[in-house]
Amino acid sequence: MRKTGLLACLLSAAIILPWMVGARRTQQPSAVSDPILGRWDLTVEGTDAPYSSWLEVFAAKEPGRYYGRFVGRFGSVRPIARIEFRNGTLDFMLPPQYEKTEKPLVFTGRLSEGRLSGTTEGEDGSKLNWSGVRAPDLKPPKSVSWGKPVQLFNGRDLAGWRQRSDAVKDCWSVEDATFTNSVPCVDLISEEIFNDFKLHIEYRLAERSNSGVYLRGRYEVQILDDFGKAPESSGAGGVYGFLRPRVNASRPAGEWQSYDITLLGRFITVVHNGRTIIEGLEISGPTGGALDSDEGAPGPIMLQGDHGKVWFRNVTVTPAK
Image (tube, rainbow, N blue to C red):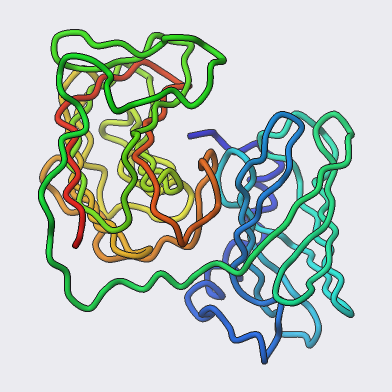
């Protein structure tokens, strides 16, 4: 979880209602009506490594005008006030959020044979290539049968898990049949990958800490020390930036808590400490910090470890057959 900067907040407040209405109204369009409309899974060739991004384009009331929303390498979904698409060329611009620059982010590209490709500018001013494909619908199955539960943590060591990077070596360890991070740290990724599944996981937070559970390595369900606060999409139980829970079911820091999460296609149900807080809602796209943007592929469970102190135990995934 990253808090949004003031400039992005002001822009968001100015245009949040139009894109919320559009998000309810607009489904993935056919390429026949307007080939740029809809959701796009983006990959940016960063200076250190490729990273995930995401774009959704809506049609404005005025013919030939567009607006949209965007997810960058980190942070939350943010609105785009200006998008231009003419003769196959796409241009859009938005203010920075967590990018280490004061300049607006500018993306320029072309749509050809159903694929986007173009360039943007990195934080250091270098030119970065990016590409995009239309996001899959990922509709849930009409009926589901469940396989055998898979225990992802044996209570003794970190077998079956790997760190996201070697930026901080060996910063995850096992203590008292739980596994935990030593801050500073990096994310932890399961070796096993999953498509549709049910996840049970228990966690405990230090005061003022935050973490998250990434489903298929792409969709973050937020973990945050925000007991007693109003529910937010960036708060505990929210799908970060996209879906707000009905209630904040958090317990105080230091107490063990649980998530029971069902993910079918891109539709999610979240039970937090025994209370259903999100039920059968659609996740529009990958959240900030995702491993990749290949939404049609299975993916791992990823635990966010690069923020604050957190402990996990009893991590069980039951895959759909």
